[in-house]
Image (cartoon, rainbow, N blue to C red; front, side):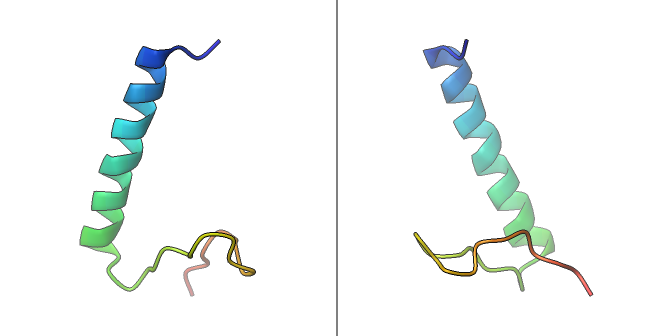
Length: 44
């Protein structure tokens, strides 16, 4: 079961991943809330 400490760690990890994506893949954009095109981006 996920506790408060686990939730905090998960949020911290998500923030780190967002920073990495912004740094190394600046062309990737985050979808807005309830976007109709929610999917994993494909690199071509």
